[in-house]
Length: 267
Image (cartoon, rainbow, N blue to C red; front, top):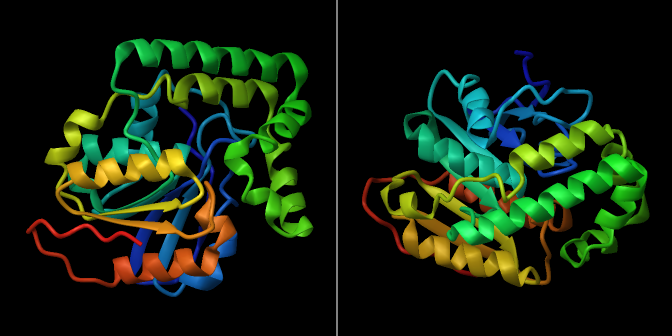
Protein backbone atom coordinates (compact mmCIF):
# COMPACT_ATOMS: atom_id res chain seq x y z
CA UNK A 1 0.00 0.00 0.00
CA UNK A 2 1.52 3.32 -1.09
CA UNK A 3 1.74 6.25 1.30
CA UNK A 4 -0.40 9.32 0.69
CA UNK A 5 1.61 12.28 -0.66
CA UNK A 6 1.59 15.29 1.63
CA UNK A 7 2.85 18.82 2.00
CA UNK A 8 3.89 20.33 5.31
CA UNK A 9 3.89 23.99 6.23
CA UNK A 10 3.75 26.19 9.30
CA UNK A 11 5.71 26.15 12.53
CA UNK A 12 2.94 26.53 15.07
CA UNK A 13 2.59 24.55 18.32
CA UNK A 14 -0.62 22.80 17.22
CA UNK A 15 -0.33 19.89 14.79
CA UNK A 16 -3.14 19.59 12.25
CA UNK A 17 -4.14 17.22 9.47
CA UNK A 18 -5.73 19.10 6.54
CA UNK A 19 -8.00 17.28 4.07
CA UNK A 20 -8.92 18.86 0.73
CA UNK A 21 -12.11 18.60 -1.30
CA UNK A 22 -12.86 16.66 -4.50
CA UNK A 23 -10.52 17.80 -7.33
CA UNK A 24 -8.25 19.43 -4.74
CA UNK A 25 -4.68 18.52 -3.81
CA UNK A 26 -2.07 18.77 -1.07
CA UNK A 27 -1.49 22.34 -2.27
CA UNK A 28 -5.12 23.39 -1.77
CA UNK A 29 -4.46 25.08 1.59
CA UNK A 30 -1.21 26.88 0.71
CA UNK A 31 -2.95 30.27 0.72
CA UNK A 32 -3.76 29.78 4.42
CA UNK A 33 -0.16 29.39 5.56
CA UNK A 34 0.45 33.16 6.02
CA UNK A 35 -2.77 33.37 8.05
CA UNK A 36 -2.47 30.38 10.40
CA UNK A 37 1.07 29.04 9.90
CA UNK A 38 2.18 30.55 13.20
CA UNK A 39 -0.37 28.52 15.17
CA UNK A 40 -0.41 25.34 13.07
CA UNK A 41 2.09 22.81 11.83
CA UNK A 42 0.04 21.46 8.96
CA UNK A 43 0.16 18.06 7.29
CA UNK A 44 -1.77 18.58 4.04
CA UNK A 45 -2.54 15.15 2.61
CA UNK A 46 -3.34 14.35 -1.01
CA UNK A 47 -6.32 12.03 -0.93
CA UNK A 48 -6.50 8.84 -3.04
CA UNK A 49 -7.14 9.40 -6.74
CA UNK A 50 -5.82 12.95 -6.74
CA UNK A 51 -2.57 14.11 -8.30
CA UNK A 52 -0.46 11.16 -9.35
CA UNK A 53 -1.66 9.01 -6.48
CA UNK A 54 -3.31 5.65 -7.12
CA UNK A 55 -6.55 4.53 -5.51
CA UNK A 56 -5.39 1.49 -3.55
CA UNK A 57 -8.24 1.68 -1.06
CA UNK A 58 -11.38 -0.43 -1.08
CA UNK A 59 -13.97 1.98 0.27
CA UNK A 60 -14.67 5.09 2.33
CA UNK A 61 -13.82 3.35 5.60
CA UNK A 62 -10.51 2.19 4.17
CA UNK A 63 -9.56 5.82 3.45
CA UNK A 64 -10.36 6.70 7.07
CA UNK A 65 -8.02 3.95 8.27
CA UNK A 66 -5.25 5.22 6.00
CA UNK A 67 -5.62 8.67 7.52
CA UNK A 68 -5.76 7.31 11.07
CA UNK A 69 -2.49 5.47 10.48
CA UNK A 70 -0.76 8.84 10.02
CA UNK A 71 -1.68 9.99 13.53
CA UNK A 72 0.36 9.09 16.58
CA UNK A 73 -1.34 11.48 19.01
CA UNK A 74 -4.53 13.55 19.29
CA UNK A 75 -4.49 15.97 16.38
CA UNK A 76 -6.59 18.82 15.05
CA UNK A 77 -8.38 17.71 11.87
CA UNK A 78 -9.47 20.33 9.34
CA UNK A 79 -11.47 19.25 6.32
CA UNK A 80 -13.20 20.99 3.42
CA UNK A 81 -16.19 19.43 1.60
CA UNK A 82 -15.10 15.87 0.73
CA UNK A 83 -12.30 16.32 3.24
CA UNK A 84 -14.78 17.41 5.90
CA UNK A 85 -16.77 14.21 5.40
CA UNK A 86 -13.61 12.15 5.85
CA UNK A 87 -12.56 14.25 8.86
CA UNK A 88 -15.88 13.54 10.52
CA UNK A 89 -15.54 9.85 9.76
CA UNK A 90 -12.07 9.87 11.30
CA UNK A 91 -13.42 11.50 14.48
CA UNK A 92 -16.31 9.02 14.65
CA UNK A 93 -14.11 5.95 14.17
CA UNK A 94 -11.05 7.15 16.12
CA UNK A 95 -12.13 9.87 18.58
CA UNK A 96 -9.01 9.29 20.70
CA UNK A 97 -6.90 10.54 17.79
CA UNK A 98 -8.84 13.77 17.27
CA UNK A 99 -8.21 16.77 19.51
CA UNK A 100 -10.39 19.29 17.66
CA UNK A 101 -12.42 19.20 14.49
CA UNK A 102 -13.00 21.91 11.88
CA UNK A 103 -15.60 20.93 9.26
CA UNK A 104 -16.10 23.29 6.33
CA UNK A 105 -19.10 22.64 4.08
CA UNK A 106 -19.34 19.00 5.15
CA UNK A 107 -22.10 16.45 5.63
CA UNK A 108 -22.61 13.46 7.96
CA UNK A 109 -23.99 11.55 4.98
CA UNK A 110 -27.35 10.50 3.63
CA UNK A 111 -29.57 8.97 6.27
CA UNK A 112 -31.90 6.94 4.05
CA UNK A 113 -30.55 3.88 2.29
CA UNK A 114 -32.64 4.70 -0.79
CA UNK A 115 -30.99 8.13 -1.04
CA UNK A 116 -27.53 6.58 -0.78
CA UNK A 117 -28.34 4.15 -3.61
CA UNK A 118 -29.52 7.01 -5.82
CA UNK A 119 -26.43 9.06 -5.00
CA UNK A 120 -24.13 6.14 -5.80
CA UNK A 121 -25.80 5.87 -9.20
CA UNK A 122 -25.32 9.60 -9.77
CA UNK A 123 -21.68 9.39 -8.67
CA UNK A 124 -21.13 6.43 -10.99
CA UNK A 125 -22.61 8.35 -13.91
CA UNK A 126 -20.31 11.28 -13.17
CA UNK A 127 -17.28 8.99 -12.83
CA UNK A 128 -18.09 7.44 -16.21
CA UNK A 129 -18.34 10.94 -17.70
CA UNK A 130 -14.86 11.77 -16.39
CA UNK A 131 -13.45 8.60 -17.95
CA UNK A 132 -15.20 9.19 -21.27
CA UNK A 133 -14.63 12.94 -21.75
CA UNK A 134 -11.40 13.55 -19.85
CA UNK A 135 -10.46 15.84 -17.00
CA UNK A 136 -10.42 19.15 -18.91
CA UNK A 137 -13.99 18.72 -20.07
CA UNK A 138 -15.15 17.58 -16.64
CA UNK A 139 -13.49 20.49 -14.82
CA UNK A 140 -15.12 22.96 -17.22
CA UNK A 141 -18.47 21.41 -16.26
CA UNK A 142 -17.59 21.20 -12.54
CA UNK A 143 -16.58 24.85 -12.26
CA UNK A 144 -19.94 26.00 -13.62
CA UNK A 145 -22.02 24.24 -10.97
CA UNK A 146 -24.12 26.68 -8.89
CA UNK A 147 -22.31 25.32 -5.81
CA UNK A 148 -19.15 27.14 -6.90
CA UNK A 149 -20.62 30.50 -7.87
CA UNK A 150 -18.60 32.19 -5.13
CA UNK A 151 -15.33 30.84 -6.52
CA UNK A 152 -16.21 32.27 -9.94
CA UNK A 153 -16.13 35.74 -8.39
CA UNK A 154 -12.50 35.36 -7.26
CA UNK A 155 -9.72 37.18 -9.13
CA UNK A 156 -8.82 35.62 -12.48
CA UNK A 157 -5.32 34.69 -11.33
CA UNK A 158 -6.70 32.75 -8.36
CA UNK A 159 -9.20 30.93 -10.57
CA UNK A 160 -6.46 30.07 -13.04
CA UNK A 161 -4.32 28.57 -10.27
CA UNK A 162 -7.25 26.50 -9.06
CA UNK A 163 -7.98 25.27 -12.56
CA UNK A 164 -4.35 24.34 -13.13
CA UNK A 165 -4.38 22.15 -10.03
CA UNK A 166 -7.72 20.60 -10.92
CA UNK A 167 -6.80 19.58 -14.46
CA UNK A 168 -3.55 17.99 -13.24
CA UNK A 169 -5.47 14.92 -12.03
CA UNK A 170 -5.90 11.82 -14.14
CA UNK A 171 -9.35 10.75 -15.40
CA UNK A 172 -8.96 7.29 -13.87
CA UNK A 173 -7.89 8.74 -10.52
CA UNK A 174 -10.72 11.25 -10.21
CA UNK A 175 -13.30 8.70 -11.31
CA UNK A 176 -12.05 6.19 -8.74
CA UNK A 177 -11.96 8.88 -6.03
CA UNK A 178 -15.60 9.68 -6.72
CA UNK A 179 -16.58 6.03 -6.51
CA UNK A 180 -14.70 5.51 -3.24
CA UNK A 181 -15.21 8.85 -1.46
CA UNK A 182 -18.37 10.29 -3.01
CA UNK A 183 -21.42 10.97 -0.88
CA UNK A 184 -23.02 7.78 -2.15
CA UNK A 185 -20.10 5.77 -0.74
CA UNK A 186 -20.06 7.56 2.62
CA UNK A 187 -21.59 5.77 5.62
CA UNK A 188 -24.38 7.48 7.52
CA UNK A 189 -22.73 9.24 10.49
CA UNK A 190 -25.87 11.03 11.71
CA UNK A 191 -26.66 8.45 14.45
CA UNK A 192 -23.16 8.81 15.94
CA UNK A 193 -23.10 12.62 16.27
CA UNK A 194 -24.64 12.81 19.78
CA UNK A 195 -21.85 10.57 21.12
CA UNK A 196 -18.98 12.53 19.53
CA UNK A 197 -17.47 14.57 22.35
CA UNK A 198 -14.88 16.38 20.27
CA UNK A 199 -14.92 20.21 20.11
CA UNK A 200 -16.18 20.91 16.57
CA UNK A 201 -16.31 24.08 14.51
CA UNK A 202 -18.80 24.03 11.62
CA UNK A 203 -18.06 26.54 8.85
CA UNK A 204 -20.24 27.37 5.86
CA UNK A 205 -21.05 30.28 3.57
CA UNK A 206 -24.44 31.92 4.04
CA UNK A 207 -25.07 31.73 0.27
CA UNK A 208 -24.66 27.95 0.38
CA UNK A 209 -28.13 27.23 1.73
CA UNK A 210 -27.87 23.44 1.62
CA UNK A 211 -24.69 23.10 3.66
CA UNK A 212 -25.61 25.91 6.03
CA UNK A 213 -28.85 24.05 6.74
CA UNK A 214 -26.89 20.84 7.31
CA UNK A 215 -24.49 22.61 9.67
CA UNK A 216 -27.40 24.03 11.65
CA UNK A 217 -28.82 20.55 12.07
CA UNK A 218 -25.41 19.06 12.95
CA UNK A 219 -24.91 21.72 15.62
CA UNK A 220 -28.05 20.53 17.41
CA UNK A 221 -26.80 16.92 17.38
CA UNK A 222 -23.16 17.39 18.38
CA UNK A 223 -22.49 17.88 22.12
CA UNK A 224 -19.63 20.38 21.55
CA UNK A 225 -20.37 22.36 18.41
CA UNK A 226 -19.94 25.95 17.26
CA UNK A 227 -21.33 27.16 13.96
CA UNK A 228 -20.35 30.09 11.76
CA UNK A 229 -21.96 31.04 8.44
CA UNK A 230 -19.93 33.70 6.64
CA UNK A 231 -22.11 36.39 5.10
CA UNK A 232 -22.07 36.70 1.32
CA UNK A 233 -19.90 33.58 0.92
CA UNK A 234 -20.59 30.34 -0.93
CA UNK A 235 -19.37 26.75 -0.62
CA UNK A 236 -15.65 27.49 -0.06
CA UNK A 237 -15.13 30.07 2.72
CA UNK A 238 -11.43 29.22 2.98
CA UNK A 239 -11.01 30.48 -0.59
CA UNK A 240 -13.70 33.14 -0.77
CA UNK A 241 -13.04 34.75 2.63
CA UNK A 242 -9.67 33.41 3.85
CA UNK A 243 -9.05 36.19 6.41
CA UNK A 244 -12.45 35.69 8.05
CA UNK A 245 -11.97 31.91 7.90
CA UNK A 246 -8.58 32.22 9.59
CA UNK A 247 -9.93 34.52 12.30
CA UNK A 248 -12.63 32.01 13.26
CA UNK A 249 -10.27 29.06 13.18
CA UNK A 250 -7.64 30.87 15.27
CA UNK A 251 -10.28 31.82 17.84
CA UNK A 252 -11.54 28.23 17.97
CA UNK A 253 -8.09 26.70 18.30
CA UNK A 254 -7.03 29.23 20.93
CA UNK A 255 -9.99 28.66 23.24
CA UNK A 256 -9.81 26.39 26.30
CA UNK A 257 -12.32 23.55 26.27
CA UNK A 258 -14.08 21.62 28.97
CA UNK A 259 -16.12 18.44 28.71
CA UNK A 260 -19.33 20.33 29.36
CA UNK A 261 -21.70 20.96 26.42
CA UNK A 262 -21.28 24.47 25.08
CA UNK A 263 -23.86 26.68 23.44
CA UNK A 264 -24.00 26.98 19.66
CA UNK A 265 -22.52 30.08 18.06
CA UNK A 266 -24.26 31.29 14.91
CA UNK A 267 -23.26 34.28 12.83
